[in-house]
Length: 403
Image (cartoon, rainbow, N blue to C red; front, side, top):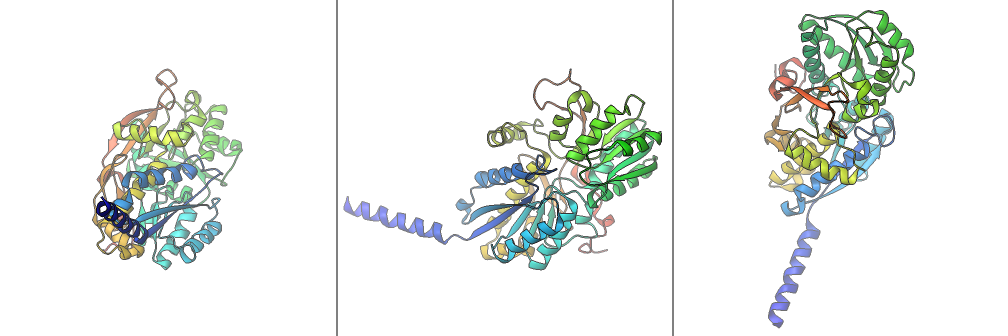
């Protein structure tokens, strides 16, 4: 009996020592925690990353993962300061989420400089896998090219030939309008003009009057978060839809639709990478997410934080020398080597330019009569396969891709 007890104590001591000696990797969720984009990323992205860690159980693969978080307040200088401290002082290995394209582009340069990993699951600029691509960046979830092409093709197919843009005046809005303009012209449409609205505008009246005066078939809202909510609500008040103009949100989230309300949002056409009620896997994840987030359903950005974190851990597990996973380029290369596969996005891959390929979905917002309960907002119009949803790699201008 004493022998068995001694053996058990010795075994426990070995296990404790092994756990203590495991390498630790740190991931930083850099987001907007209380501002315009807090609902579409923010605390929900932190929760999603932690759910990925809970599911993967990295200790069973020989390493540990710790999560830190920071609020960049949608300001590139603040985001850059946080990330430099994370990399230089707090030994953070990877950064994830990063809504606001101007912040993401700044952080991408720092990650490349410090040889760390950046996984963008919330910012949208397609330049992140185009002219601004790096060997240390992976772009998950969506980008402006995918949103613009999917939505523009559908709306032009429904007769929306002439367009006018209401565009957010910063990197994301500019990229979204640029990519949408290319798609509109390629599909036989015409852009009649645009107006640039400052970031975090509350009064869109003057901009909407210009859109109304254009007599365009389609008024395209090229903004995000609270700006989308305000502009769509105010467009209804100004009677754009009643006057025969179709409102199209080039980027909208289910949290935006909830805030706008189905009465106003019904009929909106939009493209998303994820919907909570899409299949058994998305519904199971949503149930767990709601338990932590006061019954809110996850947005595609928060789903992206889950998928990217999960794949990052798979890459670390696949590296024989775990110390190599502290090397940003090495772990990024391993992520590109492995196929992606998770319950929220399904099977996919990561290209040489860092673009993650997975299906995208074109939805139409239901009417109040069609909705059967909370967050039952979308009708699936079509599924766009991943190899068609995103810009061809040879057209992006990424210097990592050989001509």
